[in-house]
Amino acid sequence: MTHQDTRATDRPDAPFRRGLDRRTVLRGAALGAATPLIPAGTATAATATTATATATATAATAARGSGRATGSASWRWLGTAGWRIDVGDRTVLFDPYLTRFPTGLFDGAFDPGTRLRTRPEVVAAHIGRPELVLVSHSHWDHLGDVPHIARTTGAHVVGTETTYHLLVALGVDAGQISVVKGGEVLDFGGITVEVVPSLHSRNKKCAYFAPGTLNAPPATTPSSIADLPEGDTLAFQVTAGDSGPSAFLMGASDFSERAVRGLRPDLAMIAVPAGTATHRYVPRLLRALDHPGVVVPVHWDNFEVPLSGSPVRDPSMDLEAFLTQVEKASPATRTVVPDYRTVYDGDMRPGSDRRDKGPGT
Image (cartoon, rainbow, N blue to C red; front, side, top):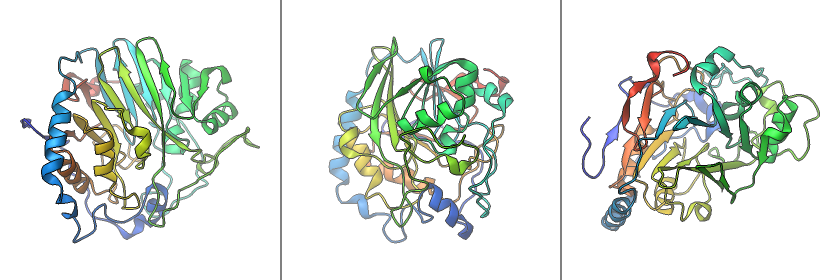
């Protein structure tokens, strides 16, 4: 697709399942509200300040990223909120959930007692040789494969105190884990990680799914998805080298407006909300981030479908409405709807390398 000078949207070729199935009420409790992102009759409510937003967003986007070298950084979407970031020969993972085992969440029979599991061959096909793993929060679709990755690769893990206690209980060496709270700026020798205090998405009653934190080791070794509480939520901004690119990474669809102000990322990997519990989520976030040059929607796919195929959309997620809101709030921003197989460069444009060449690429 030809990119426009101001904004263009890249979408995968695979057809999406559309509509909201009434059976997704349980999924709404887990991932957000089971209601459309933009209710009928209000889809154009955010147009009152379009002219001002256009001028502000265009100026902010044009001022960012000029002359930046992006050839050394590449991006691969791991589904859900997950990413593999390669900076030269170094690999950083964010929320790498790859096993994607069934829980009943997407067919109306959600079972919180579903046993935790990891498929090593699936994980190995996607992660390369990571030296760093960033974890936004401790729900299974973010933390599930991290214990195996940490134990088998020796990668350093950055996460909350809850993540620390769960990983140690699952056999990860405590010395591999850095506990953070938000506000830290960590230098990993050419890769800078800024930790951002954040929030988890909520359902239509403004309630969190599986809340709770751990301030001590769990009484028993976690064995089911119910044993993995949220444990507070973080976002991360990762910058490759001195000149970027920089990317803002979200694991859930809410945020602290004051915490993200001033970050000014080149790329923003933004979780798509399943409802409207967060007031003016998209325009507030993009304004606080100073209108990133590229927005990449994440956490809109069915994360119980294997990564071997094309993304299947979670029908409770109104991806089109999200893209429309981005266009209205930040007209100069380019949106890229990712797929599982493409390796993107530092500007989120498809590169020549394709993941479907085989495992370990």
